[in-house]
Length: 217
Image 1 (tube, helix red, strand yellow):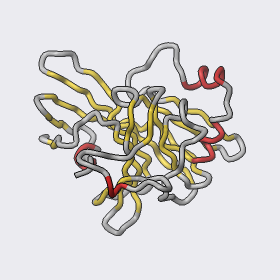
Image 2: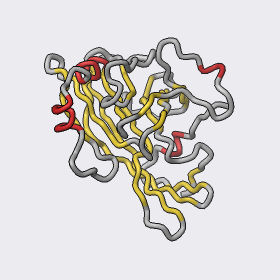
Image 3: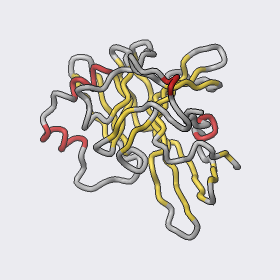
Image 4: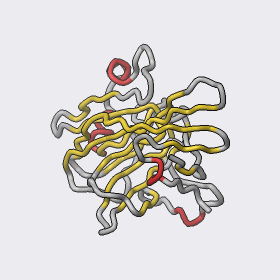
């Protein structure tokens, strides 16, 4: 069966999750508002793939939407607790989510995925975002010095290490980046729906908490 996390359990402020004797304490971090002038949502590492990242096939109405990072405090035995960005959520509607689907870009086909397989976007610079296509394409035109000044800090901040900048002055579209879990990799995004079928959010899972984990408190 393809990889599919229990996001409804993970996206709970204060949730305590245990897997293989590893404890995860989840905290919600509102990190800003994303302007979506086209409603075409892109999940990507904007510092490494902004020129080629494709939007998801499911779109939303143009507007401004809240972005929330979910940070897990990871504790193994007597080791010091580490904090990692476990998920990034673009909140579309303030309704309970009852159903999740894998977010796909044009041409992606999940039917052939094997056990624990998934489709996602590559991260090569240790950050991820959920932003409008216009914002991501505008960022692709930035010079490295500008990227370095805005999105690459001299000292790495604790997770979620959010950085925000308007990249398309005409529309006001912006990109907010967060640190991506344990670093580089490929990360899936899921789309949530309410009981009435309304889209509630897009969530990138940075694979910090194993899919088999279950909330115990």
